[in-house]
Image (tube, rainbow, N blue to C red):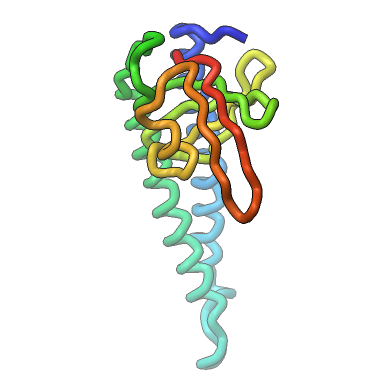
Length: 164
């Protein structure tokens, strides 16, 4: 399936929408954890009772995670998208169709949130970062390139079908 720049823009909007939804769920959970931590039933009854402390740690962790998602949303909202031609090397914001041992997959090289899966036109596109193992292998390559990786006695053959 041929990808276009407009699809890449829709992909960014979808990434932001998924992150916003995740943020909403996390903020609700953080509020509930905070309420649990400060509720009078969470007061320690003895020196071994740590319910309140555990709830406070959970609320703090959720607040930090919410901040990370907010930061990611800002990064994606201000992301400058590169326009890739056939001879340009893969870099940040590349949307790649990759054949791995006969299986085609789509990847978007984003600045954050590697592992996030986005559905776009009945296709799953996985966000990867340049720091991920696959991202490191793709960075600097061009459309049409092939390579083989041997790991743990297994061989995988890769072919870059297209880059947008």
